[in-house]
Length: 199
Image (tube, rainbow, N blue to C red; front, side, top):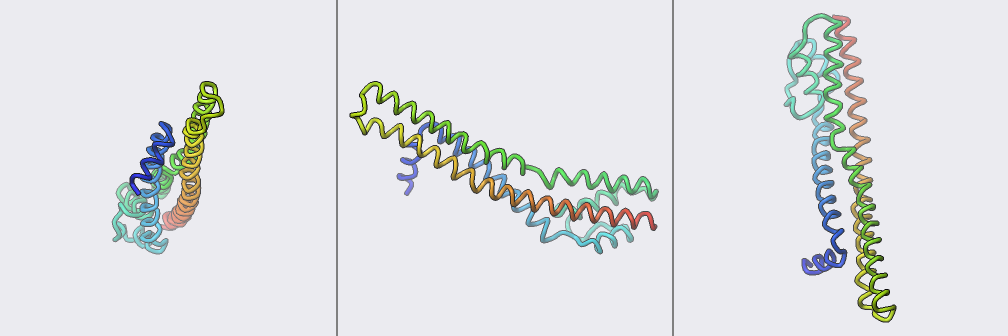
């Protein structure tokens, strides 16, 4: 198994190294975002809990480092002034601080997924150049020498696509999930602003 994998990478040529590194980087980011967003979805405080926290000026019971909503409320309560207009601005500011955390690394994942097939294409071009060099020296009679360049071209293309397709798929799913969380946070902030105006 290990030997066949090493042979596969060796046949792909030097372009396989950046494709492998790119793949590892992308999957580390995907794993981190999956964990973060699943925690944020499962353990997020409800709007009713957020209102109670605001009313009684108590931080959420759940760890503020776990969910965006809990962090938002905790951050706001630390800086709350008691002045409705200022407090509404502080609440909006807390929301703006959470947005980058929700979207962190998602664009990078999609960019890495887009780069992978381009690296595969680079390997294809490199393999075809090697094949044409063999043809120019030995002609078309040396099939074994030609096979090396052709296999390099095909393997790098395949590897680039194998990295890109799941990367695009998961990156898009994660981005949509983060956008839903952002919408929920925005809704929470709008309701909390009304509560501040009433107080």
